[in-house]
Amino acid sequence: MRKRIVDGIEVETGSGNVFADLGFADAEKLKIKSGLVIEITKAVRKLGLTQEEAARRMGIAQPKVSGLLRGDFSNLSERKLMDCLNRLGYDIEIKIIPAKEPIGHLSLAVA
Image (cartoon, rainbow, N blue to C red; front, side, top):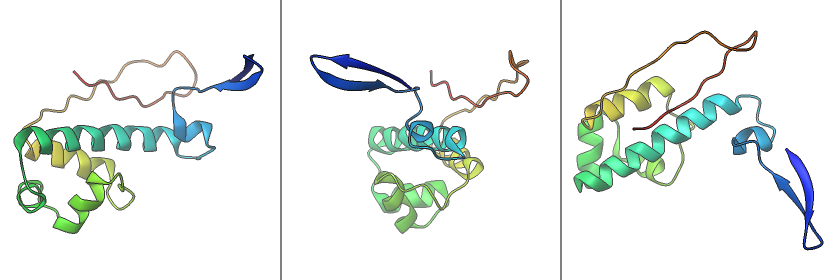
């Protein structure tokens, strides 16, 4: 993060990952999971599904759908979130490319 003064107020420019800015050790995974949850939420709304209908379609319990739609994804893995999107009619493509640095990074691109 970069700090600067704007109109007498100290402003920090974020890194692009709020989880990293807040100091979470698993920031990249959390960013991926939150992106998947955003897409699930959009899909449920676009399809006009109730939470019960979404739960049946995604193969998870309705209380978990309720949590997802409120931003609670702590109890679901990235793989399960991807499965939910598949069940809502979305394809997921995983692209692997050589890293520019010694250790690679995870990212999520939405079309």
